[in-house]
Image 1 (spheres, rainbow, N blue to C red):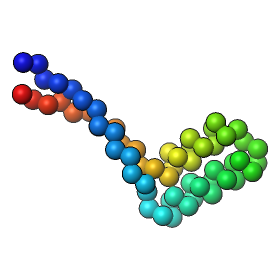
Image 2 (image 1 turned 45 degrees about the horizontal axis):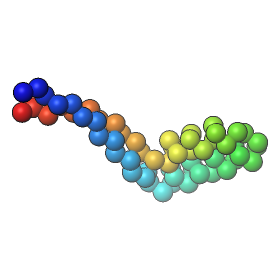
Image 3 (image 1 turned 120 degrees about the vertical axis):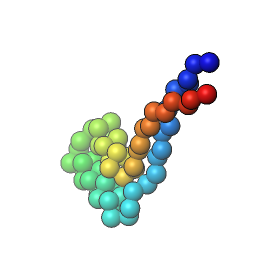
Image 4 (image 1 turned 135 degrees about the vertical axis):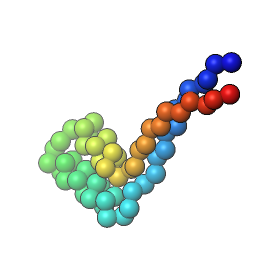
Length: 59
């Protein structure tokens, strides 16, 4: 048998003050005519806690 590898992606919102800072930063960037393709993903990275884990299951 061969050990199987897997990837787990956990996405959960951060605490409220950090989420408000990320949302305010996105609104400010859009108000200053920054491209939405840049402002929105950056704000999502600030607002959300994203963890990628690799694991190997031993059999």
